[in-house]
Length: 153
Image (cartoon, rainbow, N blue to C red; front, side, top):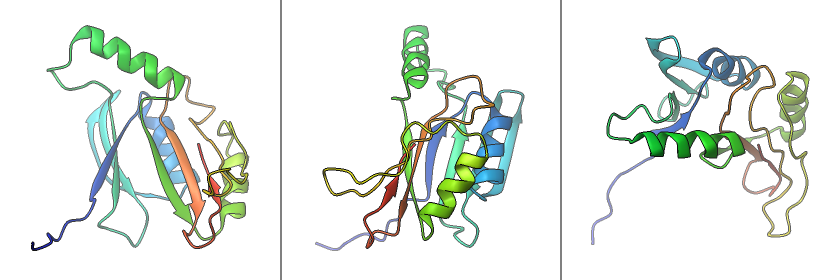
């Protein structure tokens, strides 16, 4: 069997407040804005780490697909409010410095860095920026894989 040359190019995450999402991913995490399409709350914003043009996060309005029913939209909104609809894990070479920067930004820290029983390393949970009143997907940060320390949000 021949292997295919595939990579994960873009991962979508829902947002309800585009400006708060931009402030978090661009200003706190230091991601570059690659595209910003739409207006108001109906904006599709592509961000990614500088120097890694092949890796992006698409911040998108939840349930914008016209094929989703009203019941499904309500379910998505409920899951986002609980922080169970979507999340992403990111890696950093400086977990402690990144944690300090996230904490100083006012982002809601749900769980500070700590070792996990399954060996995943310390995790810090940051579900959404404090300035964003609505639900926001969780974000997790970890040291590079060889160190096994993790920050989850």
